[in-house]
Image (cartoon, rainbow, N blue to C red; front, top):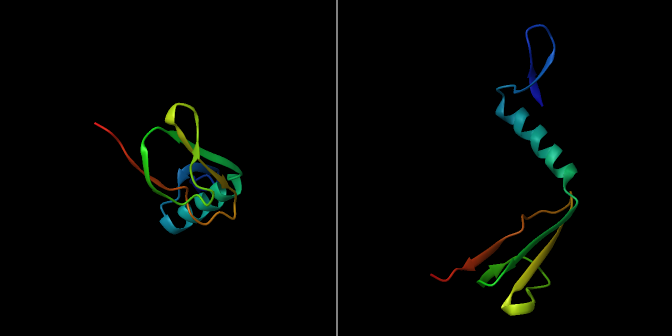
Length: 84
């Protein structure tokens, strides 16, 4: 993850090599992904990438729930139209 101090002790600081630091960070993040991401709103949903669609809730609320795992390719995405 990080670089190495002059005395050979590992550091939590980035090594300065963006490809190495990014690859390790992405791998760590992907391994940790296992759960759901839920968006509940009363806004108009313009688009989303959740296969099941928005589920209606009380008071005109709508809920989108994405299952996220290490194999998930696309981040949960939605576009909302907010009222003034």
